[in-house]
Length: 184
Image 1 (tube, rainbow, N blue to C red):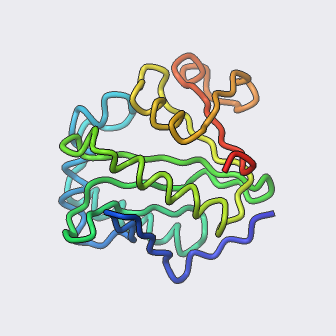
Image 2 (image 1 turned 30 degrees about the vertical axis):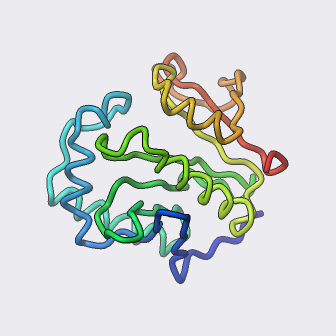
């Protein structure tokens, strides 16, 4: 069973990136990302996020991280503190040693290998530090770029979607991908 402790917040580094906790200064960028139709294309959420909603979300994630319920990293370049996107572990199931990975990025940075670089480091952290046995992802079936990202990182599709107890509307549109610790 997982024994999670995200205090102090684990800042992660890659060749080009810093993965860090959100700060109030990220609220504008978060609002912009969450209000972009290209980002929301495959997500069922409000079309826009106000600055106040972004500030509230940052506070909510900080509280959930402090309670070891989830962890979300802001992705930025090492030399520039601007938020490019985020990547997280949520829907953590400690008794099953598993978590769901989620991610989003501003479209200006699509296709530059940034999310792939961030994902590789977050997967490494999940298996080595969190001691996860399984990482799951539930992209929309039509989100080919997200599925390609997962497959590049050795996730395999699980066709037994019924065991995930998703609402019927999600079952129709969702693909389930899994990465087991023995693949790394």
